[in-house]
Image 1 (cartoon, helix red, strand yellow):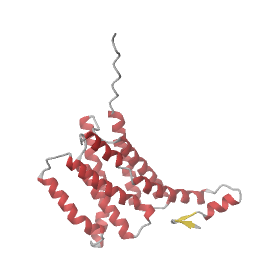
Image 2: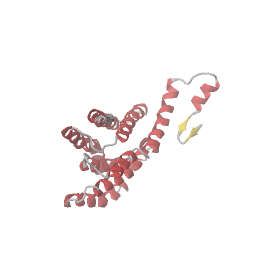
Image 3: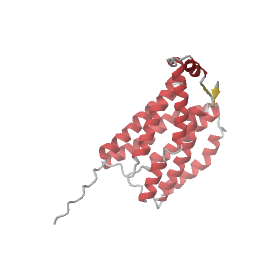
Image 4: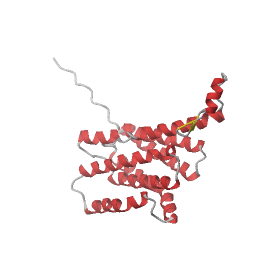
Length: 235
């Protein structure tokens, strides 16, 4: 018995017999459910960051390069997964993350006026190349090379932000909730990748995500300024 690609027959059989499902039955089920939970959560993961920027009308402390590289990484990963025909539960979050990341970069551009020529060139090149990559209209060797580079892209997408946070001793307008969800998502995806015997390269990506997202989350907690206490009224 399957629902949206999830086999629940073994679990239902065990429960029907009055027994708790064993590990071999339960872990794959949890992995599939967790995979879809990650996809569902990804639809709003960057919303807190977007709303925080719009509320404060500021991109203080945010690394434009970091967010731009994140868009490139999501594009490559989504294109590769689509090209390979993987199950939606294994990569669906990248579709939603890409859409939100593009919106986020557009907002950062808006509040970073005036934009330099180099920024416009990067944006133009992405708009020109991304549709071709997403459609899979690139050579197999180049596709594999692009996918192999995604881990370096995601790593270097985080490093500028981590370094800027360290240099400023502040995380500016970074959203704690978005970073927390990114970290939890990396942890959950690591579990599903292990459970589904994903290739080592994919597991490595999850580990990089845990390390980098965890670093930024730690910085937010470390550099968070305590709220000023209310002054006592002097009579």
